Amino acid sequence: MTQFARMLKLSLIAAAVAALSACGGDGGSDASTGSVSNPTPTPTAVPTPTPAPTPTATAFVAGAKPGYFLIWGGSVSIGKLDTVQQDSAGAIRSVSSFTTTADSTVGDVLSTAHVATGEWQSGSTSYVSGGNTDGPYDNKSYGYSYVVYNNVQAYAGDATLTCTPHFTTPMNAGKFASITGTATLSINGGVANAAVNMTLTATDKSQTNISNSATLAPGMNNMGTLLAGGSRTSAALLLGEGEAGGYTLIAPWAASTTAGGKYTGIAVFNCK
Image (cartoon, rainbow, N blue to C red; front, side):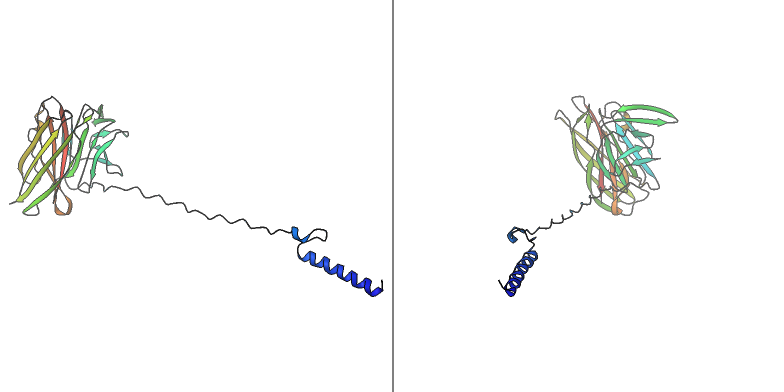
């Protein structure tokens, strides 16, 4: 082999080695064994959902002459509202000297800036006065229905109003009954003419009518026979401030059925 031929052969071998190196070979491997690595995809971050805010009820705001009414079993308490404790859901937990326990279920809650009502249906309630405590008493037997409101100081003018009801649930021996009813309210010549007509359907399905009507001067109430004690079926009438220039007609009531059951509750009518 001539010197030129040997040089040509070496040049061809060098060129082949260079070609293999360019394809990823190491000079001793077949170029077809080379592989291409696929990059691992970056995970897409999933945003954490923002929890919806817990609805906050409109809080009752005590005015110039706030009042309260509590009714349960065979007892009532009515007077000037000294203190009140209300949670963010609108439930009242303490009214003047009466306080229910933290585990108490508060049903039928209604709360506006002018009135708040509901019923302590479980847990227990105590009355504290002058450093002395009366109770605790079980709420399950009859339930404590409460209302806090602002007494009307003056009527805006003559008007005939439409009233929408809200009821606390009648209870007897821990069992729930039902109540329905209507109210009328008109203002004429500086006095209010108010009337309520309700029907209690007891747990034994018997029905009892509960009604009252009265003429009310500003700041005045009508108790019917509610404070007479014993077996009575009656409703009181109280008039408080309402929404958008209207009024709140409040009717705490008690009823004794033909079967001997005793029920109490509070009806609150938004009249405007």
